[in-house]
Image (cartoon, rainbow, N blue to C red; front, side, top):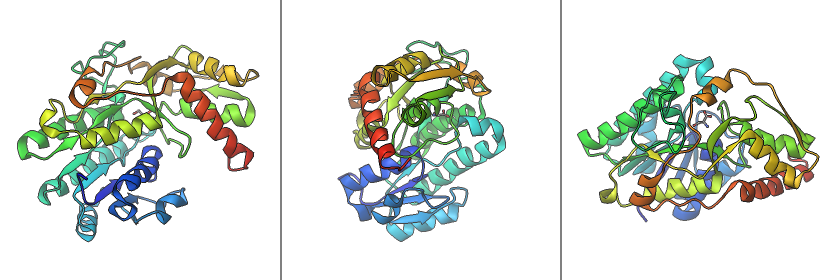
Length: 322
Ligand code: SER
């Protein structure tokens, strides 16, 4: 086992809620401390192990939790996503940058073994090559969320070089899952479409049908995150900015995949301000560095994901849970 006690921030979110449980399976429930700014919707997080209220803008509070539980690794997931970030840019800057600096400073001062901080495809912008986007490329995002992600990647690398702190991160694509809903992101349509298909047989999408983005199913996201956490540091040439690809599809491809299993499903389109955000991001990414440096390989494609999503969400719907 690489770590004795892991603290997660943003545990109540889409990735945090599932990553906390996955890490509890590996490390033991008492060794994985969940935290969030508010009580999580999912009871499982609180009943299956320690849970603490934590505002990442409060550095002393982070420090106190590290001391209380003897934490030696932090997965820092608390962040404001792209769509909310455009509505509240100063909040996105504050939470994403000052929250991250607080976590990095606590880790440096208390000599933690590792910090994992996600980046995103939002680090890319209109000048970036859109197909098979290279690992090393132009990073000129047009959203505040993207600005904070580029700064976050640079900060991570700075702490590696300047202080010898082990900081790692992945440029997550849109993440699709069936447990906790994403909140305030641009790629949220790729989750909402499945819920609406099961519940109502139709969906109104906030981006156009030919909008194509890199996406990943949650089991692959968990695997990528945990594999990078456990990768041999000496083999890593990159640290905080790994491209990770899994699939790339347009909204039409997604709707067609759902129609294979729900033939009566219909979709219409009412693009809003999130169209411009989606248009500034790539179609697909080149993840050769992740494959070569720590053995990344995804398992799910669009159809295998659709089958699984519809099965799980269908069962929840039958039980009246959604
Ligand atoms: N899923 C995120 C968003 O849409 C991208 O990292 O904001």
